[in-house]
Length: 413
Ligand SMILES: *Cc1c(COP(=O)(O)O)cnc(C)c1O
Image 1 (cartoon, helix red, strand yellow):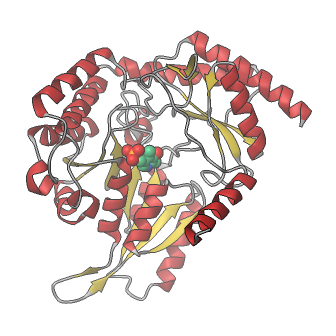
Image 2 (cartoon, rainbow, N blue to C red; image 1 turned 135 degrees about the vertical axis):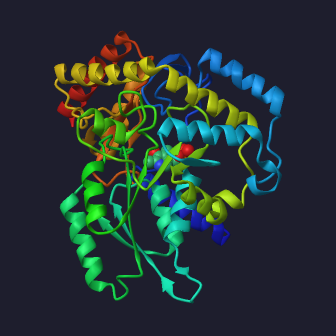
Image 3 (cartoon, helix red, strand yellow; image 1 turned 90 degrees about the horizontal axis):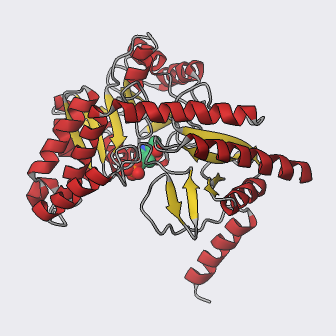
């Protein structure tokens, strides 16, 4: 055997032994509230929260955009790739988010990696002074945030999940160890909605702490845009709805691939931040622009969200309905005091979570088992995510079936 074969075989075997080996399931229909695997199944696993991937009028606009703009962009944004739809999309995003300006990337992953590595790398100013960035990162942040921090080579303090006291402790510890306090930048970064737990970052408190310690704040609204707040504008809208005064973070990242139902990532903030990223974010500069048709489709879909707040409200009503239905069946969903569309049902054991998920699929419900290394060992869970277009019948059937399977299997185990 070659060393490559033995290396990959060893790694694969280790994952199989730990029940963390992954396979891909193939779906034979568009992303929607019901999909075809062999038969029709209820899809409770999608990031297309508003069911816009498959919205008929939006699909026909997208088809027209391909006919007008072609299949690809043909170049990077800074060479020939930048077309009218890219600039229009950035204006639509900035307006939707109520910010000065926006910059789009190929994916949300690239937006995080490019933004964090550009903002948090060492900087040498005109007089030759070197300043560094010290990063404070929630322990449950998305992999693309972690990879951005690694790429920046900045010193990073990981604070306990959503624990504001631990964040302040970390900042104080960093200050003590920092001999260039007046030069260095302090940078707090967090998911807005945590992707495996569905809970929300405490934006008002994070802002207080950032101000108090003269730190910058960045949030990642991948699962918040189109979902959180009365009209889906995100975390700041949500807290203001709750009468907790709250401003935008200094830097906000998001994706066009979830509730917006397209592809691409974005950053919004002050004009000068966007100007800086256009010149410094390597995952923006050294890659081909998203196809102009996709940019046009994303602008159309986002405009649909802005003009159809009832779609966002349907989603929020579905979340409440599903959590209540689970509760009636005796299942406590981990996030039912907040309003994200991610509803984890913590199982613990990796194998048991997988078994429940497989049994659910036999009953026509697709809810994946999320296991280590995506979540910590022993914290395996069913991760349900809802769409605005699931019916009451879909959700009540799912809640009943989950409860029946869960209770039967846990008795047996
Ligand atoms: C999905 C996700 C991303 C990545 O977005 P893509 O557009 O899928 O690359 C980034 N951050 C968080 C929190 C996410 O959930």
